[in-house]
Image (cartoon, rainbow, N blue to C red; front, side, top):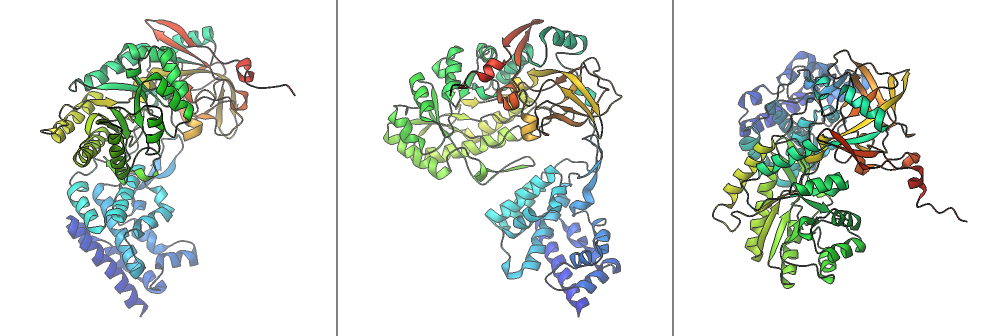
Length: 605
């Protein structure tokens, strides 16, 4: 009876997967799916441990510590993520990791999971069951991030939009445009390739000797070049305006340089507004975009008379009370659901910014009672992405929302703000964005979506930050200690107080050794700071040339969200900043002192 029960179960599952595969056009995979389960090596285990409500493989694993049937199965079926595991050497030490699954096998995995949940859960099954299983599954952590994003996106669509729409999307979109991935090849990454920068070798060491370390150095030429490229990318849109997010690099000399190049700024606090006012920005060059602001922030924006953005319905009356509601005010939208671009999927319900579509409609009607006849629309849908699909996909979402607002309220749209979100190639293997091609892709979306509508020639705003200044900044630091124990550790005079991203996010920043650029003989090093926290590490198991005390290290791509995120934890003080222009180095911020650290303290009893 166990043999018959097991045969019925695996056959029911196989037929269901085959049905799904046929519906999306994977005929061969549907026919061949799980045939190895009928082999003696697997069938006898299923027959022995069959219970009807529990996996025989799990039962065998509980009894002998592993599953012989599963070991046989996973190596013969490409729809299992375990088939696509290999050794990853990118961190310097080999570790088992998932490789990207080819699209057709990723789809079969999704269909297999839907069918398995249907068979095993019976009447308890809902369209949310496969997603819930994935979120509970420990083995899913072995998935390559690209594959996990694809699977999560499809199972989220299943939970939210149902089976019919998900299968239609798989057939007409996912399989029609498969990811171009070659699995199971070592990642090619030449650590020396990123060592080439605007500061190298003897020049770096001489500058470190003269200025003292640590310090930030920004390259004016790189910033100017990126400003020019962004202008060129949007030359097709006469109304284009770029607003640099002050939080990325709130250094007066950098902000003044950006203003010289025609950029405005995005501020979210009273302090940032005052900083930009002192840097010479005019009110129309400042976009105030608060997120759950304090009354003092709103008062400062009202006094300055700058451009304004509403981030949520609760702000309308706060703005109205200060006389801040006027034509052209922006609405920050959160479309909800899952935002998909390329292989990425972002669940927008978890994002704290913006109006829901329903709240945006109500807000527009409320604004109209205050005499507002036009609004701008904005959405921040992803961050630090290198996908060329992001902005075009965001443009489609924003234009759709704009048309909906216009149709249902009669409001005019004064601009469409794509926000920022563009990433930079932090790793040597990362492919940088082609900003000119990206701008052209956005142009094609606007021309297609706005032709013959009131949105033709609507101004496009951008808020590019990291892409402008990130690659233009280096953190220069010196090695003071070398320790060899369980690992080789280089202790430097910079710390998380200077660059917090690695500690906060586990973020990658390339590290090079001045004077040893391009050297191929490398070993694994940890580069650490002096904050008394184990996470104060700039690099872990990083393949670097031999390091000795006194060596100068360059930490790359630190020109955005670097110095600005610094802090004084542990009494560690933030370093100074310098600007390289026409071969000369100019100090643009002094290093903090102990007096700065103590300045706000009150010592009296």
